[in-house]
Image 1 (cartoon, one colour):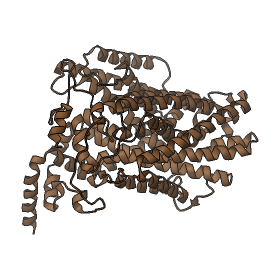
Image 2 (cartoon, rainbow, N blue to C red):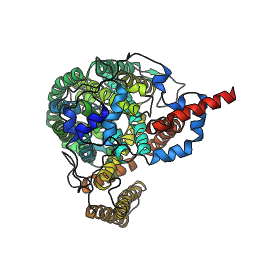
Image 3 (cartoon, one colour):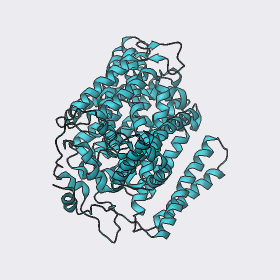
Image 4 (tube, rainbow, N blue to C red):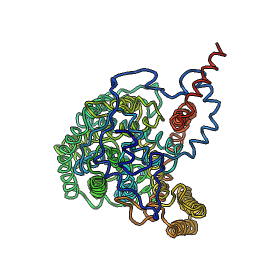
Length: 619
């Protein structure tokens, strides 16, 4: 079946930007159609191949001359890609051809709920809670988890609407590319890859800490110290590397098998978590909750920004939309169901820890294991340690699935070599994309300490979630060639006020400005910006499932994510901007030219011819 025939079946013009107004009814639900969409036939090619054409098939990289000509056009190409937007049709159909083989439709709402549970529970709650309880929040860590949980739930609403309408492996990358343009999508892609590598490395280090604590009461027992390396990078962790490698090997073998292993083991984890909560409350002391705010409200928000790591599994679940049997039903149940349960569980677990141990005595690396040892339940220490190891193992498994799907869609768009987009015909999994995230995360896990990883990870995650809320507002209020210019202008002014007021409140808080006047002004501005947006006509209605109370929910999500970003330390900003600068250099030298070539196929032959002429002149 040709692409033209597929577009007719979907009732979407092939070259359409797929933008619809309320006066022009949208087509039938894309997610519903995708459930019965026939497979795209591709010519058979050998999967294991490594030619230059597979890595750099674009004409800009045909030879040195063509690349030189492409570099000379960099300013114009940057301008073009800055304002270029993708479409639902392109992300759903056109880009999938790059993978040559399709991923298998094998997941249900049951799988998604437990994928969410398995990817989230066991990562942050066991690895970050101790660090933030002792250093930033004290017993008020329970409020930090509640704040982060609310912010995460707001982001889940945004992800769910996009995932139902556009069930594709790219997740936030594809959604931002459609609504905010190619350049913003690359910034998101860079952060997504950074998040994938750092998150997996952090899990590997946490696994090693708990395993060492079970053997001997020393989380660094199995690490190799190198005195000549700087602090934070001087403890080599070969155990973390081995665990990450094994988890990714399992994920490569197949999605359904990994999902089944995950939900079986996650049910066992749920039982152990209930045990932790009950024993924690029974053996806890209310005296350990005093003082409740030892580091003040600032410490609560600093901790909330970091423990956001604990909620990041849901974006991995959103990436599984392309392999979900019924996205319109399964994704809302899977995402919203799992995150609501997890938020309650996290708050109860954090409170149990705070009651068992005085915050000054909490172990920053293996908090729960050491806490049970402190109340005389040595056997429970091992049970909790094993549960934490199992939880972090399933988090690595699900993380590997989601991270490789992100990478696959980024490669489909040619922002990284399309070789990484190839899907294996037998396993139905993107093996090359999985290997990319595996190798990089193993290198990070070998050298980098947990505190360094967590701050970078939180900044990347929060910035992407903030952009997702902006993208949802754009999707509802702006449709190309439909929205009136005056309405677009009003919308942009309101959006600027919402973002500006959120930044203003964050700056006031971060600089410890006293008094209520500044906060009152920024709060009123936020209300005015959101109210003004609510009075504008919406240009699009959700096809199947939509975020309630738009623009209030996404606007609040923007404010909370910006506020949490501002609560991170300055080191997180430095590390984030250094990483982003490196990625921007790559974009200018490679990414912008590859994506420009794909977007302008009519100019390919002339560019190759110019490159040949330039090469001939040089020779």
